[in-house]
Amino acid sequence: MIVVKLTSCLLAAALATSTVELIPAPSVRAESLLSQATEAPRTGLSPRQATEAATALLQAIQTKNAAGIYALLSSPLQAATTAEAVAKRLESAPGIETFRVVAVNPGMDDTTVDTVAITNGGTREVPLMLVLDDDGKLLAWKWVGTMRPIEQTALNFVKDLDAGRWVAARYYLDLDFQKEISPADLQRKWTKLETVLGGVKRIKSALVASQGGEQQLVLVTIEFGKVTDNLFVIFNRQGRIINVDFSADLV
Image (cartoon, rainbow, N blue to C red; front, side, top):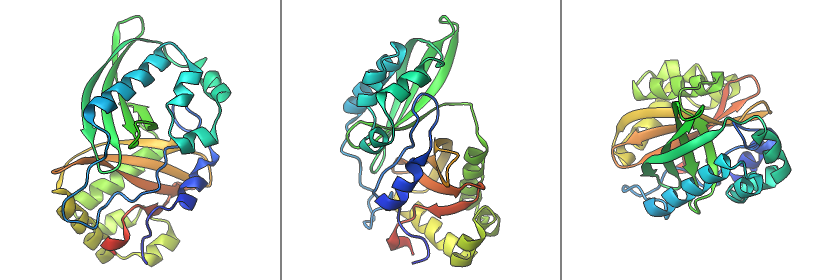
């Protein structure tokens, strides 16, 4: 197999280091993004449930309720951190005066929620993106407008794929990974992905879920014709891509 699906072992390896903002753990999931069917499946989490989950999380952040935040993390995140560690990060977190949910975008096995937080005594609106699993638990989040180096690399990789720049996209891969996947392989996989999901409408953002360890995890949020979903891109410590979650049916 040229590119393997993300397994629980691979995802667990990304749990070694802290993640963005308040939560010192990464975003993970065991399933592949892509279905073997021609119609893209949808998460079982309804928009109403996603809105409620996002609201509960933002309320916990607003009140600096570390135990409440910990209870809203996905199981792999809970296994990788503690309520005490969350509380420590909350000490330096910006204060949220009010917030609102702007949009809910159900994916195949996760949901992206766009929110706006009012900070700095009510004088500044800051977009905040959340990614929730099928149970409404937090997978990842980021303040929109911030960009870390591996987030930019992940975005550049996906943008090159979307533009059909297969050789350029392959440049971001680790040398060992390049030996396993050719430009033609990338073209075949990406073309199948677009066919299944109705083409790319917009590449929205990239979210670091785990950074600084032997394996680093970035989610690239993509608005397709049929669904908005997140592509998982795995980096090594040196910032080179070592895995992408194309599923086996795209090999």
